[in-house]
Length: 137
Picture 1: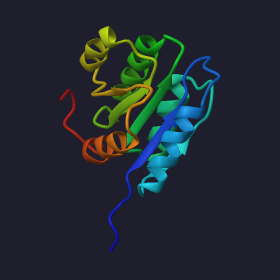
Picture 2: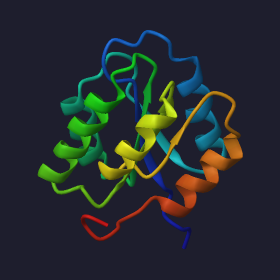
Picture 3: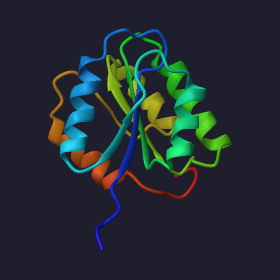
């Protein structure tokens, strides 16, 4: 019996209009054997979490270039907790200042990636971190 594929929801919340990077990451995850649902541009936190619940996703990855990363990650995390999927991985990338990465970790965003990060590092991180974890870990 084949192992269950890791399922990842990938989305661009807010008004970002540039999605080349997230498409590259999504394609790399698919080629690494993961199931990826790319929701596209201008998603709301509600639509992202609803898709994660419907798809029973193991992870959510947000791509944010707008500078609104604190708002979007916080709202997605809150909705994940409210919808019973707070044990799933929340990660992402984009233009996220180093000074905010500790704050994101406090919100339960384990790690974020930036331009130039190695795709293999992203794949390995999701492969080893996705899945169910104890709440508030």
